[in-house]
Length: 497
Ligand code: NAD
Image (cartoon, rainbow, N blue to C red; front, side):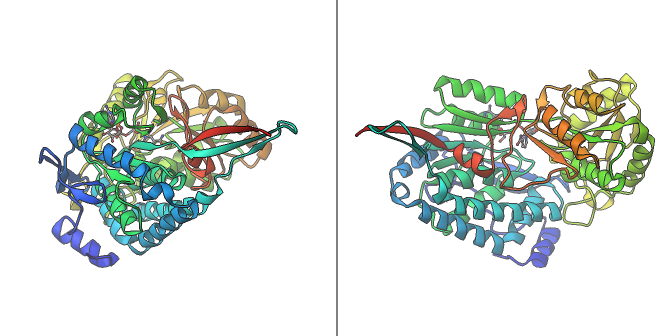
């Protein structure tokens, strides 16, 4: 197996794939085929062509994986100290650091994202495992003052078997931000990666096993949402569901969870605002806006997909933004382009239909607004970075998540109107503001409904900062100590002395 970065890139370029990918589910400590024997293909979005096949799981595979996870709850894993669990996570972090190039190249082939972005994601996952390695033995409860005749304490216990459903836009990072804290808390898991991007999650399961995780503690079932995903969230052997994906699927998962009153956390979509006040540092703000919407070709739940700009600087900002965007190159994630492909042909069609509807309704498209075929990319799936002016607060471009490189622009007259515009959708995931006036920034931070607010740097933070949404963006928190407590159930114990 190759771990060298340039050799891997050369292998991927010349063969269209990399050798040694896990092709089955990871259940009870080993790679296995589907009970049905079925397989599915995963495509390289940069070429628009299949690059590897993997097992396609169904209800039988899910049942085997859940049984393995339940059995592992009372196996050697349950007798390990929190510190010993932390050591396994730390070894996994180190192994991943050694193999970062392999994970990054596979992530780029599977998801389409630029290699530099995949490398950034893998680096973040190395840090995620290190963070939760250190947190495993710090899950302390409280002692509660009940007077001289009682002793009251709270104990954080692992919630049990966790089902995690992962989307295709950040396959490894999203899987890791559930797996690492759940393992630190002492849970076991069954993870279902998105059908478009199964490989790095399977590789992570192999790696964790190599780092010392006992059999059955982490299981991965590949397959579609309709088959493997639906069977997993409906399984009575699951104690907690972590779902990341679209609102419509999240609502379906919520209904399935209700059947067995299963605990649930939902990380859904967004239509997040980036506010530029007239006094902002314009160059910094423009780079912030570009990163917020065009990273991963806009396929980010927390993308800054709405630019809310104060009228006094709107013309200047839009002129510079359009010039900057028109200089961006598109191409395969393994090349040196500024924007990579869209993950699937279906997602490309969704983006196109949003923009075509806006064009028909009379929205002014300042740049982009079409698909494109970069030279070296065969039948790859690409959409030009696009900027469109909104027609009002009820414009679908303001209200609906597009999940692509499309920036909607709203022009406002001051902070109060910016806050009203920021809060005018049913989503509430993240929000950003650029201003030199910190009092203004903090007024915005207090008034905006969002799980996280960024001041003068969009996406600032990291694994230590809790992440999650409000309203249609979901509920529950990943990352940070809040993410760890998501995988715990609190027990109160009171003794009469
Ligand atoms: P999706 O809802 O179609 O699929 C997400 C996952 O759910 C996939 O693994 C899919 O196989 C599975 N799934 C589908 N139907 C299912 C069912 N009936 N039961 C159980 N699982 C099922 O979403 P997507 O198109 O893959 O991802 C894009 C969406 O995810 C966007 O709306 C985006 O905003 C959101 N997202 C949110 C976050 C966040 O942290 N808030 C992060 C990434 C993506």
